[in-house]
Length: 583
Image (cartoon, rainbow, N blue to C red; front, side):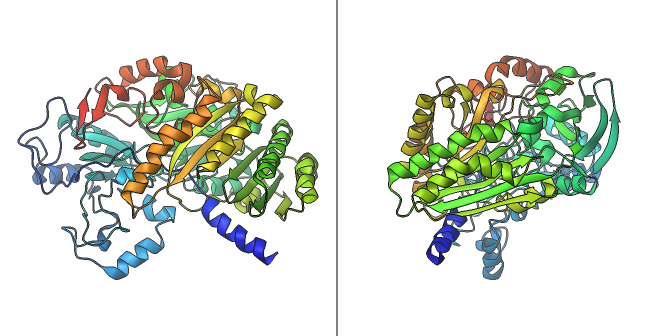
């Protein structure tokens, strides 16, 4: 047992992951202090060092209009380098590296991002002290916004001076949308209001919660628990719930019971790229409401708050399980995985969801969760799988508990508390594939082929077919027919850029194609996939893309908001020296 515990401790350290992407190829040094092009590139956003770039007195004047909230970027890794930002500070550097995997290290920064490739090794604390430390692909400035007035003044300043504008909250961004060389960011982390209410409209009357743009999932869950309600939110508690999570659809351990996060938005308070503050709901600005509710974040406007439907707190059963692959014949290892998957339809039918992680090192489930049910129900459903483990004398750890509340179950069983840096791919697995034995065999064979190449696979079994009863939205229709959402993960290497590049290329060219081959014409969650996806419009947005594009063009005709794979992003591109230019 001690041997198993040791193996599982190692296994847990490498499998308790959240997704974060990385590289296609390394960009050039984009230091904003060493080069100065003669003039701005035609049809490009203004870039530091160009004559069009605002003078310091203009930045100072702008700062005075927003109450001193302008933050000039100092790269988070600067204590680990001798640079224009200051001398090497070994003590501070060691402290930074020791807490690097704590999301708070990054979401308290106005510029840091949790997807290391998009930092472009601009100022990497894990590289030697004599390597570059420049602003690079971090935003040049950020406005620590606390009001819609801050949004409006920042938009106007960026528009008047042709600056690249991005929206950022926590830095949980797997596609690099919330950063960019030479960009001015609207940083929403300071907008922390959470207000439970009794909402009344023609579409819905009942309990709800208004959530500011900077509120983290964990902050919402605490307020919800105090008010004896639940909010549909993500498994990673440090994700900003009103940002790209809900705007991208938002899967949850509550999805099977209630639907996607976007399904429960009652209204959005949003500043459009024209600077107008509007409310988007099922009864006003309906097209904008539709687009914001599933069509991707940072694209159609800058959200100040959202109001969502809440549900009564409920008793919840949740189980976790783990075993090592050591000593298990590979055929048996994947046969066990198949038997596990055959139990999942019953979990989903009971209103539950399951998160699992399949790796070359072992298999982990954290959790199987059924809100409103009992641990006995979970035991009964998992019995064939558990018995197969026992019959083959495979040591495993299993815990199954009846919790007094969903909040208690969530806190006890979700492992996604720290950051693990990876390259990602993903796929929505349709029910039609895995509802037959032949299809399930194809899926398991594909998972085996992927694992044999070294990646980890994280899966979520759920049923997202429950839609809102008060309005339509732009959640990718493929979610409604999906049995699973899977994320493919390869490690990011801070110390070996060539290895990091190779892992990213392998994701795009070798790993994702394996799962595409058995899901032709399929889709992927727009927040958790391969940012190099060549057919991204269809893959991430499905049949909604053309309607979303028309709404984008209506509300942001000048393309003030741009992000990689965001709706309308094909109209612009990043050059090798990171200028953002019209295509």
